[in-house]
Length: 371
Length: 266
Image (cartoon, rainbow over all chains, first blue to last red):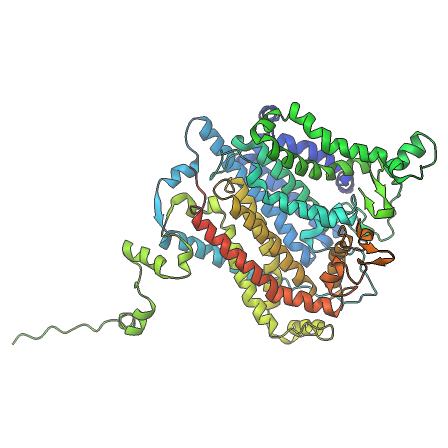
């Protein structure tokens, strides 16, 4: 058992778990036809059947129950303010399965030339009173019951009175912002706390204007809009929900990383060996001093950034994104690429940090401008 | 002599429902016939949020997950419990924490604070799941693009409401969570002291952006989380943001109807 816990602790390190999730993700939610065929061959779509759902869910609950036998796991999971996040994990899993199952069922029907399930239902019209009103009423009663029972059994926590002199370790933002706090590890606050949230909000708002695929409106479906679903789920599941889970359960004192069965040791030391790209280029590769001219010093990073946002979209449009470009047109494509590349910046920066200990690609601390 | 048939006394329920007062309030009577069932939705201001008839898929929990409706319901629960809490809570550094202690210890069987707190968590989750469902059914596609954007604003407002409420208990969790959250505002490009470009906004040696004039200061009403912040967050939490979110909710619900009702297969 200890070995198993140790194993879980090791693989849940972001360095290891994140690349695993990243690779697995695009096979489970394939954005392109090629990946979709591999997905079918590996029979990964079986997850979205009743059997697959039950197996996955039982494994998940088993792991959770097993975890509760561990004092460190139990301590963090049963903290009253963390209970909603445990709920969020289960709800996300359930509704993900529920929507994907209906989507795959509909895909099979559409492939057979039949209309989706919703279209069969939609043929019949019902009256709001009583058909909708009673559904709403039952949902409302169940929700009230849940809230009341939850409130009776779990008291709202209250910590020591506010004291500006003593900061708790770790200091965490409210849980729904923990994804942003996690980004702070890889980006400076002006990006992680201000620019990215703004871009995220406007990015989500712009989805309907960027996705001009008319198919799959008003029913669950996957095959008709693979790329849209895959990209959305990537951000929603991996960069949103998963980062919140990491931030809540796996980030301890000094924002150090701790495995789910690990004791939150305040004195845990992490070697800080991060260097900037300019230092890597000049001091380690070229073996000389950093130039005093800022522009000359950061030229590598600046060029990399220009290539990333300027050349990469054009290159992609000519190759694997040719179809996407033709469908979206120049304006939509440019906005889509800027948003996509900006958000892909997070996994890229994570990778650079883990693989090469890179801190900043462009570091101009003189103007608080670090990327 | 034939006895006159004894007239049966109508039941009390019937007597009540036949009074002038009753009929003045409930115009349509008990909705038994099809006509009455349609009229009850048309005549009632609350039920009037709905259309009269719907395609069957739209009433199935399987399709809607009921998450939008639940979000609205939880918002109402939070409003009611919030109003009750406002009776007992004073937003000053001196009293805030003590008032919460009083709520906890002096009110027998009191669960209003619990319902408010867990409800707030739950509302964030239901709003997210609502967004998730709307995406998975492709319901943001034309003609509903604008309503998706309004929905995103509602999502942000929900999180801001929760964020401002986080500070009010004035315990360690509260002020440090808000400190962590608001520190980022200090890094706003151009408008935060530690943000890039802030030094550009200066005349000679005079910086226009400093710790007492930057974005973080505007958010906190001070250089650190203190008395002014508490009042600021209290007003935003209880009046400012609810007012704004109500406006967006009205637009959201209105547009659901105007864009052709809940989405469905075409």
